[in-house]
Image (cartoon, rainbow, N blue to C red; front, side):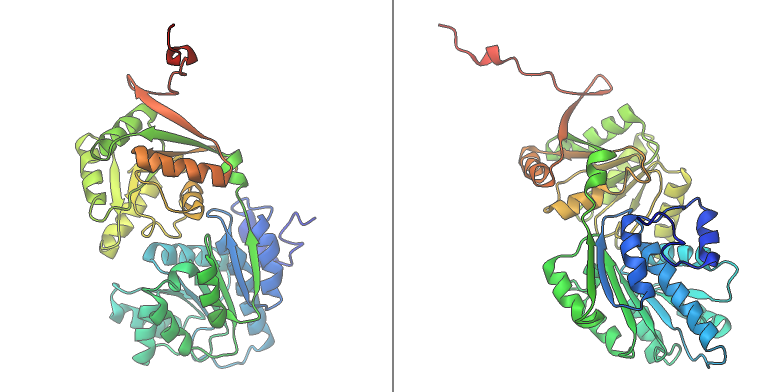
Length: 399
């Protein structure tokens, strides 16, 4: 039985960094993925949100990179050797932060290349840092490559994070263009919390037809650490119900999902009007506004962050006590993806769905498929209560 990172073959440099955050034992997905990547295998892996996917690939690939440098100290560097791609700014910024944390005290440098940022500054940073690691979105890396500002000919390691998004219909062409710019001889890794059969089929040609697949069906957290609630509200009353629920429960941090286009700002405005510290995160925000919303939420200046499934892709925010959905997702994977934002690191969390009659019927089907129990709740005089049990005798007809 593996109980330590040393047993997985992780180098002392990285173990010391992990210990500084009190990470003593690997998660199940890390136990399975790290040896495969240290063995230079191609890999497609899936594990629930919050199970340690980022370190599952960063630790072995950074170690491989350092070993390459030791074996070939005089090799001439013409460009990055590890490229990590993700679909959103928040995800890529998070990966960059974790990479910098692991690399503290090492000679390796990483840069973040995202569309929407000042490209001239990025070009200057590339000249100055000469990074071995590039993290960013494919569109900007393609642009810089075609401008001759970054060479991709020495890429030896590629990671596709939130890979199901990168091979979705709207990003598939861009992903194909990007892959065409890379050397064929490379180690490729793709990962996500959810991977459909269609996504897997699309990924294999980009990763390798011989790539190993690792899936950790981690529903345990949904049962052990998360309580599931449902509140009834008609569509027009949902925001009012949300507001009353937040007032009744006073969460430390609540993440609210709402997938109706253009409505996130409306939800935030109504919460702010009623003196609830809230911020929004949605697709067409500029980068600075998105960063401020995330910083405010992480620091606690804002207690409620309203977002969509797409905008929240890959976010890793600690100490979320409640996840609240103002709609019901279409799949068990999507529900698990949302719920997995809370109940992390053995802590307790609550997943709350606020829905109308049709949505709650759909939720009941997800409940059955997931094998969880979703408890109905009502709001009464500023409290969240279980509904009164129905007296069977009231349904009997008097003779």
